[in-house]
Image (cartoon, rainbow, N blue to C red):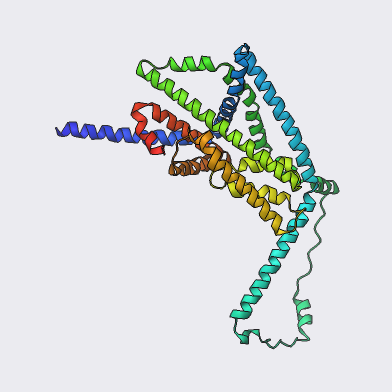
Length: 386
């Protein structure tokens, strides 16, 4: 009996060691392959977002390949138009940056003055009176300047001036251009991967049925049914999450944009979508959504009342969307408890940075959908569930 017990323990130890090594290898692949994975997940997300429109065109007797091509073309045209409008807003903002810089310097100067005044008031209350009395100033030594001049070393030769052409080039180069110039390799790599997204989206939409059939053929018997339920669960969850968040962001963009237009916030066409979609970021979305309109309104308003009004309206729209609309559009499909959401944000944020915070919830919800539809893994799904 002892040898069999030892062999069973050894098998458990080897299984545990292999699982730990497998998890470590998976985390390493996720970290070092983040460019590829982020591109793939972005394409899948856009594909789920465009899937209802493809289904609409297929109901009009169009072949799926043609419907996918039409939807992708319209999406690219919409993206181009939106990008052109945002470019005009950003170009105007770049021209007004000196005005924003002046206003920010004024605010910093006012805050510094108030802090210094508060510090002097605190010192006058806390410091003893004897420290406030002037100490006798030392008498100057008439021979000190002569000794100091004799002890000073000779002045070094003046530095050689840089070439005039190099100085002019550095003066004309903006900070944004200088940053892109120094990090051109990162931007080239990101642009190269982003160029594959339209092709990936088109092939995912047009070859969806073929990929589903091929995927299910990898399984046999009951496993095929579990795989089909997992596929459908991931698709339903992702579509609900992506489409629901898109609708919520669109609602926040339109509502806040109308408000920013009436109170004459500069560049409201740029500020409104940034504020609206930042509001959807978990936990820190509300302060992040308040920041863009407040910064944009700096050259226009100096009264604190307007900033309180902006913060109040943005906060009201945020609470309305997240407490009333989010449970109906997204929460009914994404059943994750707050602890699982927090751990997922920490994990994916530490691996992928800001983009990891965006994809943390849908990735975790997709993993839970797989756990819920595989009998042997349902216990893990309950750990993540609400």
